Length: 452
Image 1 (spheres, helix red, strand yellow):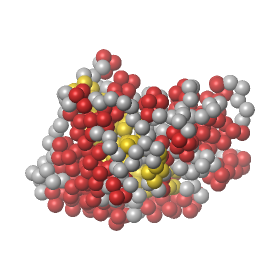
Image 2 (cartoon, rainbow, N blue to C red; image 1 turned 90 degrees about the vertical axis):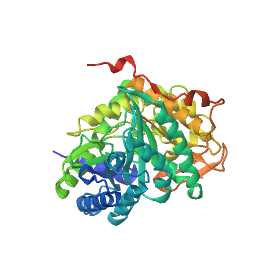
Image 3 (tube, rainbow, N blue to C red; image 1 turned 180 degrees about the horizontal axis):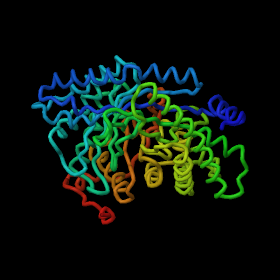
Image 4 (cartoon, helix red, strand yellow; image 1 turned 30 degrees about the horizontal axis):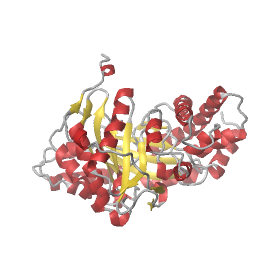
């Protein structure tokens, strides 16, 4: 039973500590939209999405108005489009992206994810065409997000796909250079991608999911930071316990929103993703949580240990607060979206090497890093390969979302606006991996993949 102090505490979290539900994401299966005629398939996709999600935005707004809980984004994820495109006798599949964008505009959602392919062990029909079309698809649309899974612990790493994705990232940035290279900010390369992720740009609706589900992603770095600021913890164990208790409260709010949305839309409840997702707002920063734990600045020695503690405590606290926890669930470290991370980069405390180490213990990986515009596709591929190796060996999800800042060098800044924030252009390490990347083939799965 809720007590008055619990209600007042939640109100304070919303009013003063940036607590919100980051997204309600409706996952929709497009399997029954498959058609060898691409125009017919696109029409089916548009019609099905609009039918299922016609009340999604209104429902989110109604819940916000009735409960006073800010719901920042209403989004849609769909079956990986490469699967739908496999039977179409054409390599010009950008029409699928345009159909998704048209549906998103009609419904008024913020983003639609699923212009995706799953190629960790090889390429099926439709995969090549989709990856090759990503730059055009993301430059011709506003709300479509794309992701490609190039590796897993069970399959290893598809280095041919890694090479293709390096080129796709650079080409996408070039085609959207007049829009601050925004296309690359809507493109994620995964290892061990999850099928129920509600967060963009990596959301897609997995083939093992129901026909339609509601997934919710919560937020709340500011709430955790404020709790640590108000409490004098005597040791690390008390810090972990405080984070767990706070994560529980945050996730309970997400569970309430998920249940309400599920009931009102008559769609099954999928999962709550209890990730701490920062924003550019001052105080709503994962970096500031780490600094509140006792670090002088995010990126100094001790940062990886503090982040490991935070990520584990968030999971332990949140999992007890929801009937179904899924997605990525932990702590995100997107540089351009986190005020504390931006400050640490500018002061020289945080670079790509330290960020790579931090990805071994966070929820995802190298996220929203702005890199010099003259970067080669092979270097981007090498960054992807390094991050995928961390995910593969540690049986965790890792991802790369880097934005080559065309026409800019290290030390400059790229401003995306909104939740994507702004990012300082970060220097990369010296040396070329071109010969390694061009070898192609597949990095074998590690020994720990043999679990049966």
